[in-house]
Length: 228
Image (cartoon, rainbow, N blue to C red; front, side, top):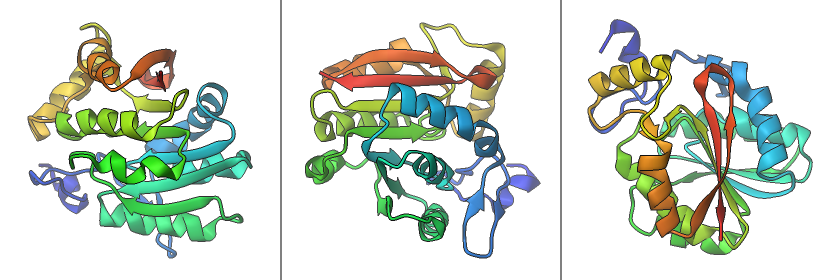
């Protein structure tokens, strides 16, 4: 681990949960440089292809910026934060308290590696789940659990949205391949996941079908599954 990593929140294996330095306001809100660069297009893509009014549960909300940015523009969205990271909870609470509306909720403590976590939230009426940049910096069990929980939570027609880097049928952009190797050096259980080989088969077992794959800047994808 490099010296600049020493201040990052750590995973169970001792590796950093965040891959960048984040600034922090006096009210606890944190700011991610990468989110600052992509939040506009992520919001626009989510509202066009996933949901523009209804209840959203975000998994691994991080700084909380995506929820705050989306609800600021989409008056019909009610967004619930969740995370396993206490520092993330502090930031998400800061963004919720700073909002000029009451449509940011949480944060909830959700660990997607916990069996049957989704059943606890199945009655909440979420029409969409959103997860950005989590499944490659967590053990693969977290992705499996997220797909399992989404199958339990979502009603027919509900959508699960991933944003982040993927390989597709074994093909990966060179920058993502280098990134994946760096992640594996940090923690062998991490790495960029393959959409068709790793994710789609598990999704299908839990009633989710791949609906859309949208190319995003910096070799990222927005991937949308629909509950059938």
